[in-house]
Length: 134
Image (cartoon, rainbow, N blue to C red):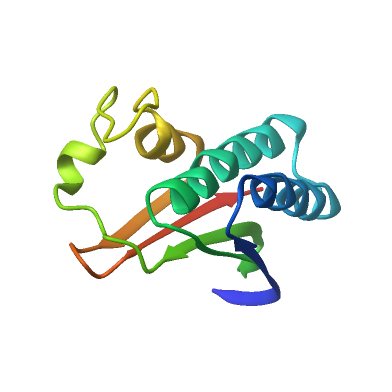
């Protein structure tokens, strides 16, 4: 897989969720993603950005345009240095929340993308990487 473009959006405050959404939508439009795919990417971006800020105590989003043969996609990596996730299986369960949310952030985002990977450990932060192909 080859990266043809990369940019970073800091995720520190609620306003940064808006910046992240705008950057992802712009790149998805520029790369010819269908409206439904743009919407799925932006929704996942919103959920995962908010998780990075609220539960990870801030971090960053790396947005990459990737190519794999004839496929073009967007790879989004949300990284924080927060407390990590103690029970990943539980965190990926629909409806479970460690806060005041609906418990759909991680599990819902996983359904909106083609590829989903999460690397986390207690005390070691969290890195969620998703890919949506055009």
